[in-house]
Image (cartoon, rainbow over all chains, first blue to last red; front, top):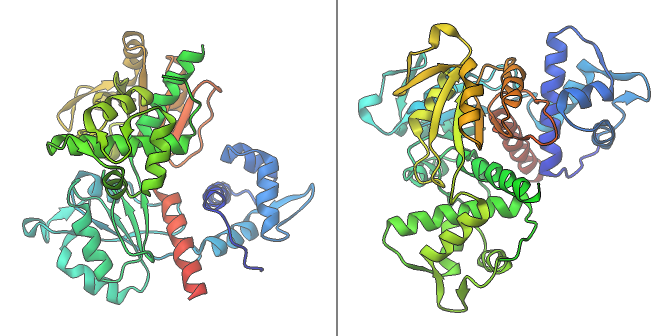
Length: 212
Length: 212
């Protein structure tokens, strides 16, 4: 396969295709047309064909895609054929709810461990998982080369958590805190920001009202 | 103020500026330079100046922005000066964790109500809030003209929840379910997708390893 620089938008679409294919596989489907992929993913079928053609010949015109093959190929591009470990930092309500919901149906990820900086929480249960001290995070990162850390601490403590993770060698962060985090350039940070999504929806609703 | 069509990316940045300004206000700061805004928001100061210049004369070169004025203006653009009601559909672990975390420090939003389709849950407590039957959602939407609904049901039940909301007149949805939802064109849907964020981070981590 030729290495292609892929935009983040394309990666997000590939992630959606993978999810659709996993679902199709679970439902016993072995072939999927680009129209079905488009419908199931909420993306136009032209975009599906264009995206998938970038990565080589995955399907033949008119005969649909082989679900197993396409999924294997997409997971290889994403890197989820061998998924990194995922840990949670912050055993509050969001952290425990994430563990409780799990990551079934995703690219093979599991929440490996949950850490908190409150000594009173160490050893306690969080959705069936034992909470570990944040001081153990360095050891965890030594044992697991590739780790994505989900920061789910109280807003205001995000930077402290991030600094500890970065010092321990973590290169990938998903933050639920409502604060921008500062990290070295080789650390990738993504944010889940409910309040920003609400702002986008509010703005869109108001703009439509003004137009109507 | 001149009405300008603003891209979603700009709206997201405005949402971040608003958050920084609220924090500055809480800390008793009345003036903020574009450099401070940039640092606090993790955005370049050139981008801050460009963004804010689009919406008119908010600050004078060299003297910084008046925190109160700028916040009022940004909230007017976003529409959060008069925030819509926010409800949660699905009183599972994520729904209750959201209520528990609250929306403090955001554009004045509050979670007004939480609904579930399980009759056994009706009337029960969820992070201090009484769970209401999903059948009450139509009444809620009649009483509140503008509502953002957060869908936090189990994956697989998202479309049923959305159909009920759309039928009741809801035009803005934030979904935590791992499935693409279908809605009429005048309904705006945003997604919080932890698994896609993990895929983006995994891909980025693997690409860097290949380059190194």
